Length: 133
Image (cartoon, rainbow, N blue to C red; front, top):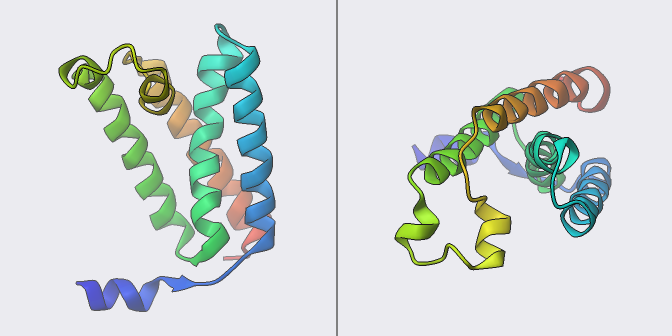
């Protein structure tokens, strides 16, 4: 399994994806700093974070776009599941602002929809405009 994974994923720097990653990181940081509630903070932030993760991987790895999109979406679902299980309280970290920022604190079905739409939207853009797959 590891050997076939190594054959399909290659380390390759891509400045376009790194630029997108950097811009999205700045946008996400500004959202986190200046917006404490509302549609942009919660929904748009979730929409953009999966694109940021996707682009971060594509910045350094040559990997199949569809497989990466699925992996990023599954990762986001895992984070949302941890929120549903109230993992921060179980770990005694419910007041840790860094943990709350990274993992979130409450489960919302709308977050899953935002993750899905973010992944699908950028996958379509990526395949048609950026990576030429």
